[in-house]
Image (tube, rainbow, N blue to C red; front, side, top):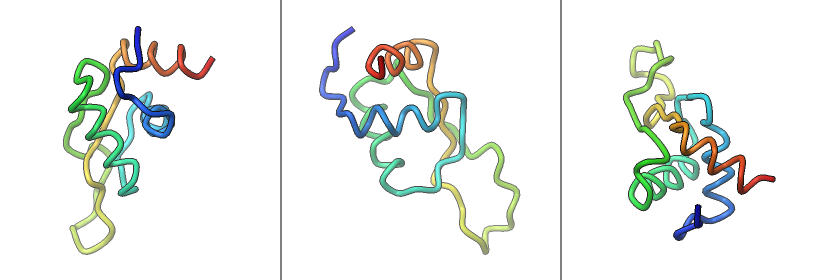
Length: 79
């Protein structure tokens, strides 16, 4: 599997949501949106899953989880 414009920073951001997470960090959010645009088969972006606030506190940008292919990609690049 080739990199196809996936940077090492984007791979780190992907690793942060490998098993699913709500994304609060702007930099990670940007990285994951870029990955989703370039390689949509690697990541699923959803509504936040664990957020239970009322909107007056810090809210996540979105929820994200890697697909099986995405986890394999990160494992391959991290080895």
